[in-house]
Length: 57
Image 1 (tube, rainbow, N blue to C red):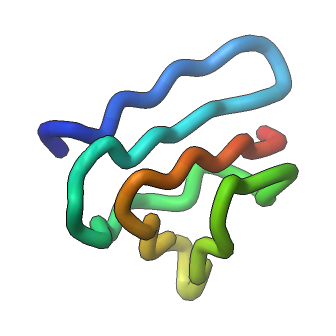
Image 2: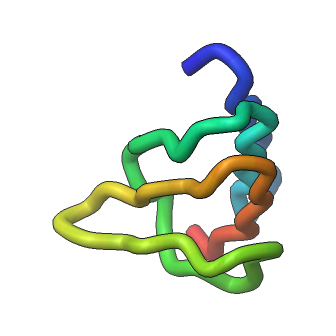
């Protein structure tokens, strides 16, 4: 979605929510580290506003 850039490198993905709202996106892998807690359920993640999450893939 707009305002939610992501980039991937071998072994990981980084997702960044730059918006003021929580967004729902497909979870690209297993959470490694997040600037805030992100709720992952049924293959999707609720990424809070102004949050970055690093994923193992």
